Length: 121
Image 1: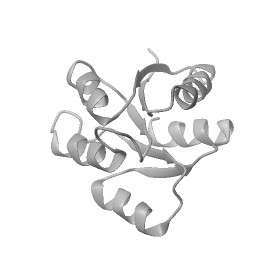
Image 2 (image 1 turned 120 degrees about the horizontal axis):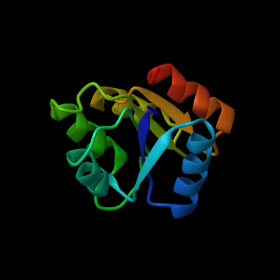
Image 3 (image 1 turned 180 degrees about the vertical axis):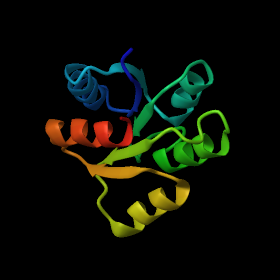
Image 4 (image 1 turned 45 degrees about the horizontal axis):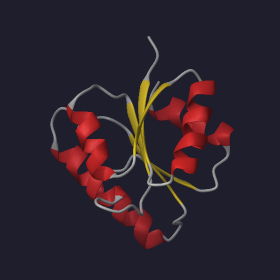
């Protein structure tokens, strides 16, 4: 049974690139367009990993991480931030919220897959 990954990004183009990469790596994927949409998906299913953007409308990535970490059902699910932000303050905020890792866009497909494999064996 393949691992299920929830990809969260307000950019359809970015979601398409992440989904293509993950599917090439053998992962099942579900897409969400913002944090609120992601929470709806999380409420209705099991996921082995979440990959989220930081800057999104409705609910940003940091708020999403906090919400996921406060829910006992998904508290242990690895969450990777995939964003254009590389500022140390933002990374620290992500870690403080409970993010597992941080990758900067544009992403290297091999690095993304290696990171997902590492946090979601």
